[in-house]
Length: 254
Image (cartoon, rainbow, N blue to C red; front, side, top):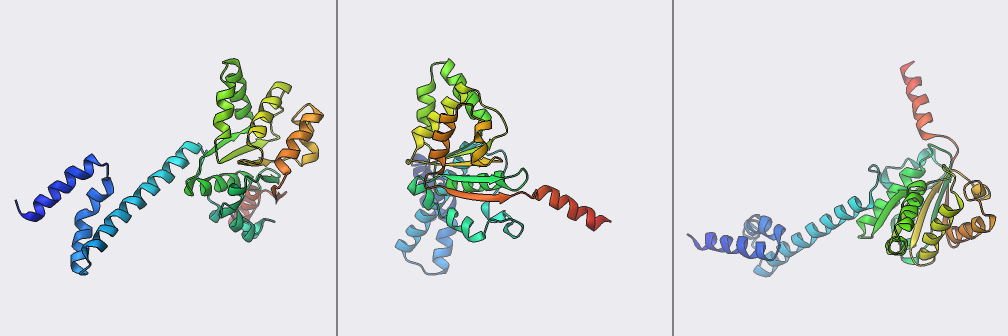
């Protein structure tokens, strides 16, 4: 066995013990590149360690996105701002994640098909890629989860788990009526996160109509107060993107 073979064998054993999978995979090709480019031993070491760190960060981003439970893949960069009242500069500012550091809410208001869910998932995905803990759910599913947790005497643990998230993405507020118990449980989540961690909400209802979802006027007032304080409120409009696209296609086919 040559000295290089022995070195590679030692690298394979030690990197396996240390769980340095990328170092093991990249050690030989990076060594060959360093030799060709006449790079120093320290530069080569920096290369392999940087490769390991980058690979771990990528895997961590992937885990965050999987744990968020997005229903589909959407990114802010893919949102068509040319046909929306929302400006690209607004999305670029949100993409920096500054609102997360400040624990500020984001509210997406607009009719069906105007891109609210796209933006909600896009915001969540951007946060995941920053290493943030994110969870996507619909309003109805969250209320059902909280009711089941309360019935199983697990409510405190469930509320605490949602409280630890960096960003909660709550979709479809306004599509399903909440009974008094469900509304109160949802309010607990909002109270747990108030001014500490961000919540992003997509809704088809203006704030003045949230009383059609939550039966108690005082509770409606408290919920609206919490989700609008220091909030970024984005109006996505009334024209359905899907309908507009269908009309365009029909025009091209005729």
